[in-house]
Image 1 (tube, protein in one colour):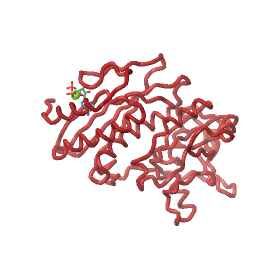
Image 2 (cartoon, helix red, strand yellow):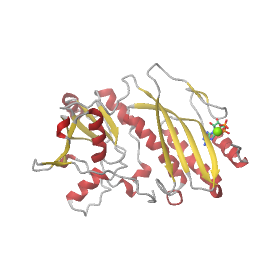
Image 3 (spheres, protein in one colour):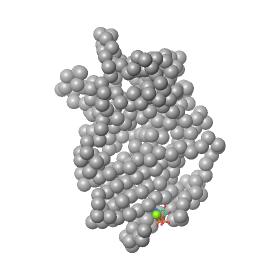
Image 4 (cartoon, helix red, strand yellow):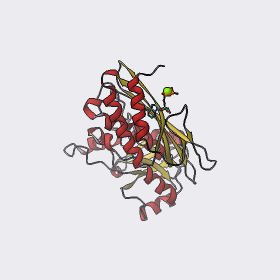
Length: 313
Ligand code: ADP
Ligand code: MG
């Protein structure tokens, strides 16, 4: 499609600002980008599309924050594979009336987190229309020497861990969270990660994804869930727990390891952030359950976070 002059000038600006590393043989400016790959392990690819009015309100949050988050959610996906993110391609559709300003702010936010995580911006596509802002970010990554960690390797008897603390993210943390890329690699170096996922919908939901893919059951200890300070302290305990289990957008790592590796993680925690043992893997027939402080087992609450249509970031 024919480009408008302001789209060209935006791309020129992005091109000047996108400093790339030597793994990018050919970046912005040609018909396609050319990226070096190291080793024969393959390339990991993740994509997320964010839409104004569904996933964010750019007037309220600021387009810079939106650009940052659009890459951050993909970085969190790469972390969940224990992979090293390398390069990103970005598709943006800008509302005509605010195209220039939004395009610049988006890029600003995106490039700042790209630099922080050593990711090259190597290409994209830019369009304007009369509709709302849409941004699609594709992130490429490489597995580390120990391979990519999938959702499907949990085994009965494994211990389940989560990084950081959970709940209350929609109060604002979801815009500024730190993807656990370095943490995933530190864990991957120290232990044999059987299965891993990043917590985007809330662990009540994400634990079911792990259980389904691994064909196992899981028991979570109510008393072991690390509840974030962002969850209102004046609420009764059961409601605070429910927030921690179902709010979502925590972007922490949820993973399982053997009991032996689990003990090592508790004895010599390798991270600067908290690491909590929250339960164990069981046989598939047992399903996904919550163990209450008195030892009683109940079904894990259903329903993680579902994007509330029209709700703002
Ligand atoms: P083509 O029509 O060949 O796809 P474009 O004019 O769309 O070329 O893009 C020119 C160059 O600018 C390409 O290298 C493309 O990857 C890059 N590019 C376009 N939009 C963006 C963007 N928003 N961010 C980064 N690179 C972009
Ligand atoms: Mg194009």
